[in-house]
Length: 271
Image (cartoon, rainbow, N blue to C red; front, side, top):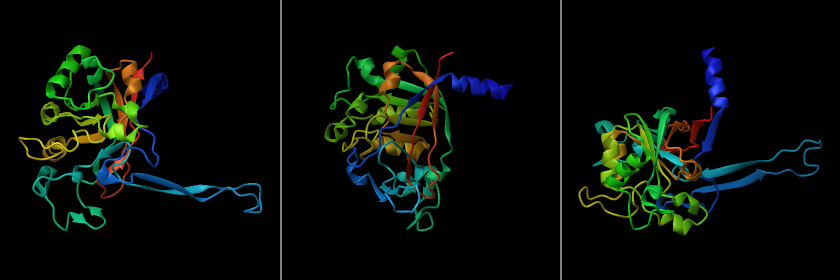
């Protein structure tokens, strides 16, 4: 009976696909170019096999941090030290990947998801490229939407930038979350965070207190073991004003990799 109830609930749920499409030329953080490349190496050709059935298949090259993806804890370090105080050395960082904290160690992410719609909270279509998302923004969005960020949540931050995926230059110019915003989420002991921009943080900006670029990566991944999901598509979820939902995300088990493409979904009951 419990299984039937679960299946019935899932059958009635509205599923929101939070992945951006993958193709060559999609927005990519410069350090991870070229991003995604796909080519056919076998094609349907008349008379190729001597039978009615033909086959086509292809190959693809993709950097781990292209498209909608999740960062593993080995992706970032502070003073050559990974999350949990694990020092980087030749036994941990090898030519074929990491022997600790690789993406295969990320469990399936299933839990309560929260959307903090910063664009709607500010009353704009898209957060201004020169106005990063602060702790005050995150707290204000939670209050306006009537949601509470709890321990173990997966918190998704919408700037409205997802609409510019087909415009790489504009997409890459978008702002991100400040260090104090990342620290506030870490203090809530969330399980993972995500945003509709290329790097969660504001790319290229040095934090004056930590004296590093991408301070959220240091705060979340290295100091607190909180996963980061980037390049999310949050427009449909925001349009329907679903701020609390069931969230599911499954990284690939690529041993020793620093990240993985993902296809996260949000599930909302329609019963």
